[in-house]
Length: 352
Image (cartoon, rainbow, N blue to C red):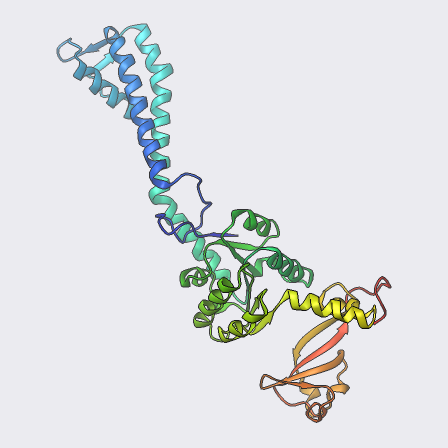
């Protein structure tokens, strides 16, 4: 599915369309000019060959008669008051004027479609796509980080129809569209853009705009529209981590800092960085899961869970380590972070 927001100056802003390389006013001017040019050509040829025409009213063919005959012939099939009588004139009407008449009508119909009917179609298609957007994931920005996030989501089994990618680049959106994702060409800092992707019904949002200030502004916009939406944001400057959280980000990720952690970890043991990367990826031997505590686990210690190795609890958004006293008794509403078996059971990675 394609959701496309053209520039705000376009009469079809907010509707489904592919951006035209020609501005609307220039396209309309070109069409009008082409129609008048074709009419002028037929008028000239009719005037040159006016001896092949007959006026049933007064048998005189003036310039006004030729102009009248040209306009009614190009736009309709004529009224019969002025008719071609010579074989040459009739051949000209059949082989030249008739194709021009059809072409002019196609221009008229195409212009009417662009200016009026397409809006109706866009509204209908937009309504259908928006109606299907429930519990979806919004990805704002389809640069390197955004693409990696989408690829990882797909690798984890997410249906691409549950992902909506927002970006201002048609080239980037074409890549997302090839993956089967919904796409929207627009500005995520605008309320209307996020409303178009039904942000109030989304289950989460990933923000990776390429610039920290833009990503933070997108987060502010999203947070005021969806106060409870989980928002993950990528920032590249460590100083912007706090402003990102203050803007409403649920999770702030700094790829530079993460890379630093992997590099630092590798100095203390050659398997540490490999294990950390294994945890973060979907195709490794181990993976991190986040889930709510099960009914049968309430009252039991974190170490007793059977679905994986419990490493942390979030209780009222407060992290609790597996070594802490509060981890010895799970409570209703606890969120468990566990290390579970991954999809790769091979031996290509370090032992887990």
